[in-house]
Image (cartoon, rainbow, N blue to C red; front, side):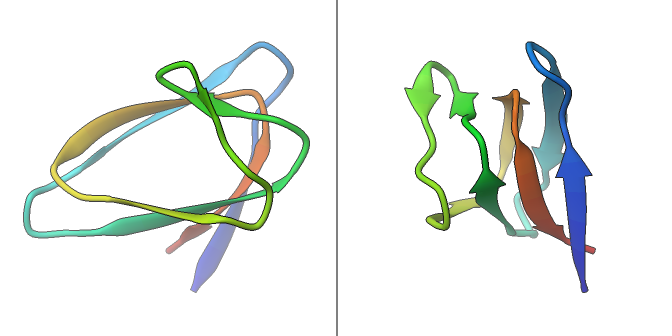
Length: 63
């Protein structure tokens, strides 16, 4: 299952991923960054054992 999360302009979405789990994020439209690095639209980013903050975008998350 995939969830769509819309983040208002100049806001952030924070999440934690445990060491025994993986989360894949895909930017669907607009612009967003993680730790100052801009995300590319339709590129998949996979996280494991991390605390992450995504700034300003619409993204696709499983679950």
